[in-house]
Image (cartoon, one colour):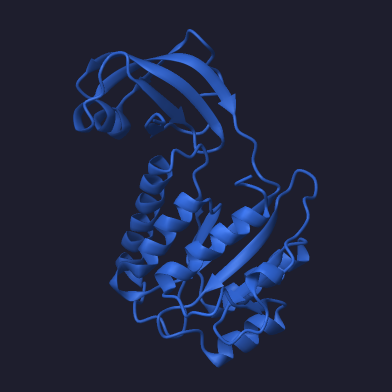
Length: 257
């Protein structure tokens, strides 16, 4: 069975090596020592969300303060092509279900999209609280999936900002795909950008709300250079489409080889 994962701040693990000690404190320490009741001798991993993983053994548990003995520190390679899910806001927490599953399946970043047909609207205090909930969802899913990289939760976009994002991605050598049930091209046939140097290229996957993407949005996104694609013969919920696309792209990019 794989070891449970706990999150550290970026840069905290790089200085560690075999034989060093690391102390879990705060929310992560409480989760390990109080909630999960980790015991001396158990193996745990600590990751910094940027690809560094410390493989450790519990040496001492003092309530929410857990002392770990570091056995090994590894740096997991990051992909030169990143998968970004643009998820339309949806009712009934279906958008959060989508980003949770997408995180478990390997997405690199998620972007909340205030689509024209989104029933849910993020404004004022609600916007900040909702964004914080997305961050918490992605963090929990990262730990559940035992990932060393924490997907970035980017700021919300409206239709105009999304069109600008599509153009920027394409200008940088990436690609943008809008999932649409009437598309003639399957996602499997849409080209993905080749690796290029140290700066990752992006595959932007746009998923609409339960009411679908409006004709005006489709026109604006395709004029910006996005490609319409379908996932298969069936129409999927907004909570399902994004994760399925992420899984398909992860396979094509060789992440599951």
